[in-house]
Amino acid sequence: MKSKYSALALLILISFTLSSCGHIPGVGCLINCGGGGNGTLSFVLTATPPDPIKELSIQAFTATVTGISLTGTSGVSINVPLNATTYIADFNRATSDSILLAAKVTIPAGTYNQVKVMFSAPRITFCTQSSPGTPGCAAGTLASLSGAAGSATIATTIGVSDNIETGIAVNVNIGNSLILTGQTVTNVDLTAANVFTMATLPPSSTKTDLGSGKLAHVDDVMGTITAVNSNAVTLQTATRGSITVTANSSTQFDTSCASPSVTGCIHVNDVAIIDAVLNTDGTLTLIYYQPVSGSSIDILEGVVTGVPNSNQFPIVVTDSVSASSSSLLNGQVQPGDQIVVTMSAPNPFKIIAKGLTTPPGNGFAGSTSVTAILPGQTVAFPVLTFTAQSGVTPGSATGKDLALRFSRFSVVMANSTLPIFSSTTFPSYYGLISSQNFQTTSGRLSLDGVSSLTSIANGSTFSTAALYIGPPTSPQFSALSVRAH
Image (cartoon, rainbow, N blue to C red; front, side, top):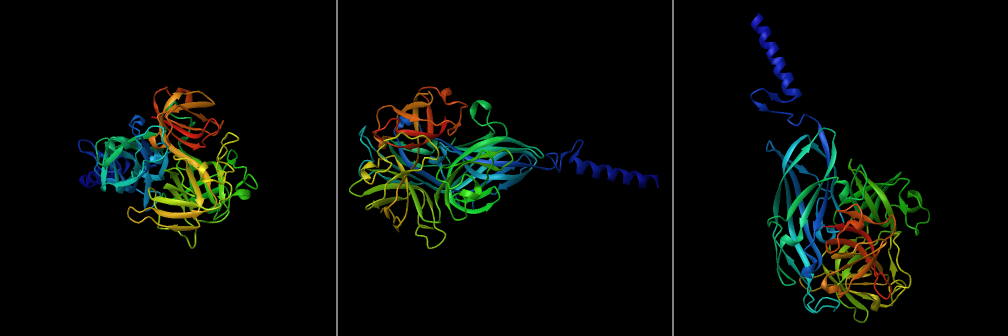
């Protein structure tokens, strides 16, 4: 009888040991090896640009991210549910802006030593311009080049603890993925060595202007409002899924709002642009709200690649919004597509400034002539007619309303002062060979890689999202975000 009780006691002891810590002395961890429970991870995408001295003119560089997984030391893989079933990432955008990949993902506690990124359909759209100071792509050089689908495995150590909330930044080194002949891209390979790396978030206090409890800026997200619930607002993007943000007492509403509040400015089916901050718990706080249209309409956004001719100018698509019904664009356009835009008898041009200071007397706002449009400027317009790109033949679109949007590019710091700083070494198709000044706006500048803009060393590379306003005013640029590399 005593032996039966001893055996029962031993079984109870083993059962308790396994359920509490999964470890038997001399055997090792079997179950619950992370101490049990779950942690929460959020993922953003960032990118490192090629050295500006290479004088590359990249308008778009995209790939469909088909999956991300974490592999633990036990060999078990955990799939990360992305923000969209078909997630098209623009690496060019990610040089200056963190892009939300996934928020508030529940991960079993434990140690993970691999992050695997799977992708398909990489495509880069670029041009060349070998004549310094000549704006626009050289004739016949604007082209798209595709790469192969594949995956990249990042060796790392990520400790996920029970009830701990943190983040991961997946970074793409664009330069390491390209093979070049002068300014021409001859091959794209996202599986090449040192293309994908990662870092944990939040960064150190010297590498961000954000305070405690915040992981990353998520700025300048355009889409259609699909839900408004108290202070929570959901916006649907064209290629990166939906994003839900929460307004608070610090949220800024653009002066174009009828009333500076959620109920007074935000409505379902509105087209809007938001700036947000990703918090450690995976939620997002609405920082700035910019209404664009009071109804769901087709909108194209693209970077201008050539000098306008008559009433036409060429763009490479960087973003879009599809109308909720009878859309001309839905399923017909992707970032990187080439479109020839016709503006016949347009209405006065506007600048979507989102609270940024812009110099008065600029040549863009109020103009009705395409001669005010410059290569390198990013513009957006409601689409009246549309024909998709077919093969290498550009598509076409017409419109009557045009607005200036944020261009994204990487340059070299010349003088890191405030409120105006300057840079050199612009992409060759901008046609800018001298140092250019950038205006900043107090409370409306997002920083990454540094805690203060004045900490960026002269001669170092940074990426920016900025309004390219153009002459005759100075500064010609107004910066929304700056990332030091």
